[in-house]
Each structure stands twice: as structure tokens, then as C-alpha cells.
Amino acid sequence: MANYTIDDIEILRKKSGITYEEAVNLLEYHNGSLARSLVDLERNGRLNENGPTTRAATNGSSGGHAG
Image (cartoon, rainbow, N blue to C red):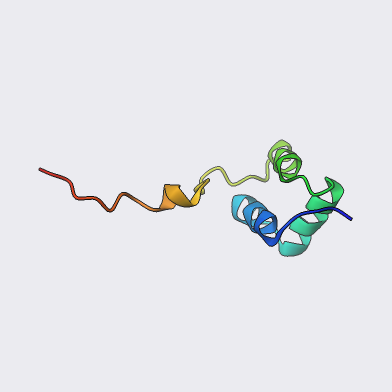
């Protein structure tokens, strides 16, 4: 049995829009490797290149800006 977490599944879903079942199957196929699963999606043109890649990318700076 492959070793992966719900976070791995969520990353695949956010980056590609695939279903939970597809994400689990992909991770199982790649023995739990998130990196190999992402490469597989990229090779098949299924990665969403427009979405944020990290949580930090969606959180803008909250610091003030002197004008």
C-alpha cells in the first residue's frame, strides 16, 4: 500500500482539478509519490498553470505602504 496523506490528495486536486478518486488512484499508481504524480499530470497536460502554487502566493502582504 502506498504512503500518502490527505494533503497530497488536496495538492493534486488544487493543481489539476481532478477528483478525489483520480488523485488517490494516481498516488497509488506512483507508490505515494506526489512528485511523480505531478509530473504525470504535467506530461498529460492536466496541470492548472493559472492557480497559485503555494498558500503564501494567495496571501498578499498585509504591511502598510508609504506613499
